Image (cartoon, rainbow, N blue to C red):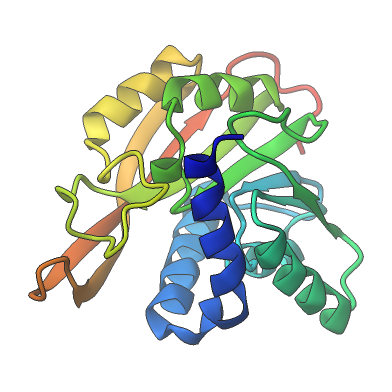
Length: 221
């Protein structure tokens, strides 16, 4: 991997131990989880995959609602923090996997539900990832992927590893449909009020794109 690709990973490793200290990150995960639960209604018979799980802020809210949850991230430091949480809680239905979401295969499925929170803007080739996610799902399986509306490069103070300054909802919905998903829709999940690049306080919106893999629903709970 090139040095430029390793730098963001090292930054996440260093930030992992204090990642959860920002209340807005915790609230964001809670709002996204609430929206996913309202839209998808996960249940204890579902196998779920969380892409770019970080320290597990979304993972650990969804874990009690599903049968199994596989949490994937490219940062060892982030997964170390999540593994510590899993061990303290004593959950046995959550496992973690270290993987580069662009270079490595997704963990073996198939899954009933694939989720992510603020991960897509770190992925260069969104259509390619969506196709891989589609292949990893059961027929009838669902996605619920949360990220920023287009924000013009104002959200992150450091753009290392950021390949998209948010997304146009209609364009992302089009990419999702082109990857083979049906019933694609987008909806606002939450809003974040924070200091933007340049020093002013600004409100950013986070939206959820959902969709379903067509086909026989055999195997879906």
